Length: 285
Image (cartoon, rainbow, N blue to C red; front, side, top):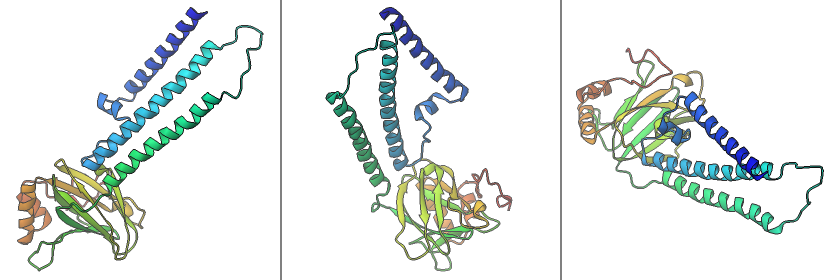
């Protein structure tokens, strides 16, 4: 009986392992994708902290899951029917009841603690090295840089319109504060690669967040709040460049160059390149 039970247990474990392997192969996942457990990798320190929280939570969930599955299969094999005799009936096992009451509470408490810690790190402000003002409107964006001055005496700015997807140029490895505000209805500033979204409200509100972009690149931005007829086309792009290139770009803007011309001057693509899947004619313009 015991031998047959052990063989049955081995067959079950082997089948489960084979099923998981087949599922991974059919999904076409790389090794990194499999061990990300479905969570994308962001380009900010806050995104990395959220990734670590996700991995830790998933490992904890898998550990609990395997433990429960193990108990289920052990009961199936160990206490399967062996005859017509009714097995001993037990109830009110106080130690077990205490364990399965206290254990979930401890698991939830630990997850809550680390979630609160990471959340506080994500929304922390006060260490910014530069500020960008983000103004949302139906249905476009304006990005300006307080402390700078263009030929008109106003801060350097980039404004999108029906023929131009605005490009928000920022330096890498620099703590940036984003002050976000709407001039009409509720919008939402969302850059998927930052793993962060902030609703943008009308009114004189203190609505800001900070982050540091670690990698150079072009990152698509969206309005993630249904804001009206042309909400679908309310796109923008975050262009992260080296601090040296950013300073050159800023100097060109302060001298009166347009954003595309200033980008072209530092060797960057002058127009947004990451608007997919919402392609428009703006790039061609």
